[in-house]
Image 1 (cartoon, rainbow, N blue to C red):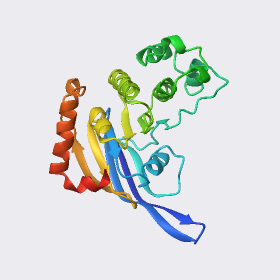
Image 2 (cartoon, rainbow, N blue to C red):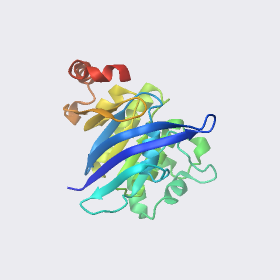
Image 3 (tube, rainbow, N blue to C red):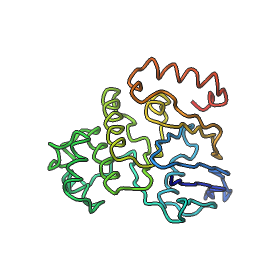
Length: 244
């Protein structure tokens, strides 16, 4: 089983206003197993997006290591940002094709899986926010990454649209599983999606708890079971209460 070993011993910024150093991440260790869906939960501003940027090689100024085991190689990364970042002058299909050389039948499968088969020739201005975010998810999946990073991709969606998007995401992930690191501020969303929850401290960010989600996936559409698990989390792990 392949595993991604993440160890960020230090990530700091220098504040140009006072020339003082602020540590953002300290001695953070996370191991991701093959085809595992992991949700990161932590207070706003703690450094979650900074971590994703490091993993995507968008930020290289840190101390530590990111290793794909058993072989030592730079993992291939797909990134779904909060903002879909679609090019307005290209169609849905063209936006996806810019990121991948996947075969046409693969793209058709992905579009159909996310309920966008009829929108492949549409331009972004004709899409809802929920549709645009689904396009960005397809674009990331189409690269067949070793690691898929998702930075609160459903934030600001209305509850019914967010529920639909989460369900479509899990259906797609089930058929084309990857290691997923998903940032969420919504604990119920995280429980619905994850195999494992990782709770992060305020800055300087480090791991304070890791909890497997034991609800069978077939029961994750039952809100009462999600809420029961959430309440039990606070009882079993009082250290996470101040994070949420």
